[in-house]
Length: 488
Image 1 (cartoon, rainbow, N blue to C red):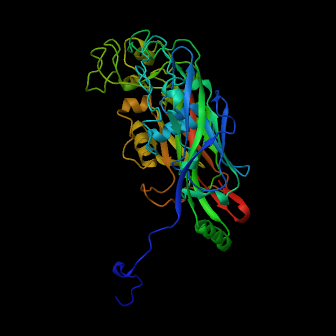
Image 2: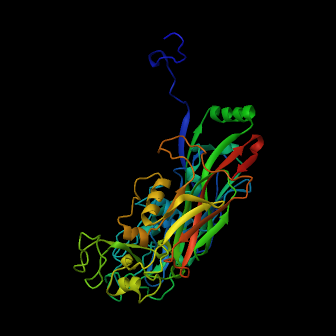
């Protein structure tokens, strides 16, 4: 057509082939040793300064040895790590918030990332371990330091915030030396259960702690790096030419800042960031930070004896007999509950505790005696403009994470008792395959204060910790001579 600036596809052509591409995978040993690493220790990997690395698919593989009566691993193997810190030329480009396990749990529970059901230990195990060993005996230990776990690395985790690195492939020859440090979690992520053959409603059930203090070690960790190279060096030269033309290359990645305090009704903090994408608030029972506790039943999805109802989802009748219903648990380090004053969260003889070991319903929220809503504020401006009850909190969380429903939450009772996550969005929504863009709230150069607060007399101001994650998009500009500029 006359005047058209577009060439019809029938008249256009393109060469869709890049020559001399080599695909390779390397196994990088830890610079801190290839043996066992204890809780609160660290594991460091120094990346090569050649090759084009795929941060999305490269993972750290390892096995785990547990000791102590009744020792059990938490759901989501990332909870064995407190953080993933990344430095580039000695400059920290990804900070550590010491809550890597909880953050990963939230990302999986909200659908931000898909968990690895094979090598990610996504469930608390009671009858068999991950490779089929029977662990139903009294004080049986879930451990992977022998057999398959001795001869193979059974578990793996991603590289934390690096998996969001964009562009996905990074030419390491243009960067200063990159070091990845994994900080091993403290002992309080471990459970110490009694007898897994007993159901909830019996004194020696798996949700009862046995009084021991189990420990664990991370065994034989390695970084399996997936890399590419181009023999002609044409790609690397083109990137250097682009740096010469425009001054720098810009990479973007996501990371989260954490603010934790004892909950009395509000959590107030200040953030200066290039792009705040969303804010997520959760609450954890203070008592659950103790090491060696029993598993927490997933409300509505944990079978029990007839005297301890709460099994099933209201339709399956899983409380009818000991062998009916699902058996779903979570570790105490994963439990996120609404901070209501009733049912009492840490009283073993109260409404909640009665559903743990004796008769009664675990987390019976029909006993709620007073209202409790939530609201965020930014520099005293309310957001959203209405107070959010449980239903509004759930809907806003789905909106913030760009999902229609939380992928692993089956009821209001489960959401309130086990997975009470409250998020608010501050950026544009995206489709899965959209090109990454920076669209969040910028607070650089301003003293911006944020707050999450409760409204109503039903708040428990004694028994909970408040944790708020601020999800940000950071920019890394790479200039000539491996110069770095960070915009956090």
